[in-house]
Amino acid sequence: MICVLAVVGNTIRLAVAGRREEVEVLKLCGATDGFVRTPFVLEGALQGFVAALTAVVVLLVGYLLLRGQVDDTLATLTGVRATFLSPVVALGLVLGGGAVGAIGSAVSLRRYLAV
Image (cartoon, rainbow, N blue to C red):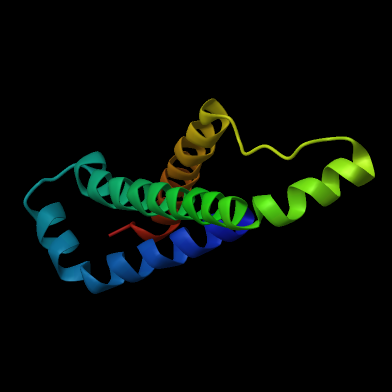
């Protein structure tokens, strides 16, 4: 989670730095901090959501590929069958990734967006 916060925070900082002139023009035209901040927070949330979704899909593919080979051995050694994440847990991870992305973006902007 700390890595996601750092990556999203740095990505948003780069995005703000690249659009610094646009942000200054918006502020000079009377845009509120929330109006300027919202697109960046949404971008961070989208990045976190896509990253978490990608991670869950990669885990699912790995599980499906290795299930046949590992299932028998694991059942023999421990008496337990391997199962994949429940849909609720997978959805929670993906939504949590989006939330962490939004939080990282908001924290990054709070320190960097003072125009």
